[in-house]
Length: 102
Image 1 (cartoon, one colour):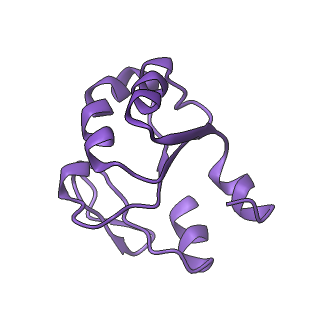
Image 2 (cartoon, rainbow, N blue to C red; image 1 turned 135 degrees about the horizontal axis):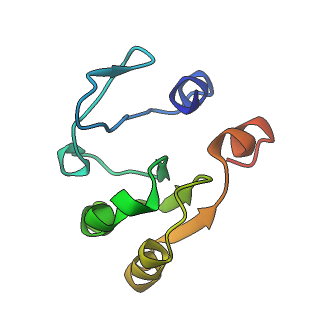
């Protein structure tokens, strides 16, 4: 739903998934390391048990901000983002979009 609603709102969306090739008809890249352009917002839908391995790639990507959607909260990631100077918030991307706060 997030990919569909972000695209409908006019945002360029780059879904990331290690196995999928399309999400909502949008081409997918397999990893953060394959994103070769600046990223304004990284919105996470991944459980905290899997986030640990992504902390370095997220910080290396250096997005303008990271949204930790419900279920993706991680104090370890939030500490790393603070150290890297990357803004972050615990929020729901869909709610932010629907209330024009995105």
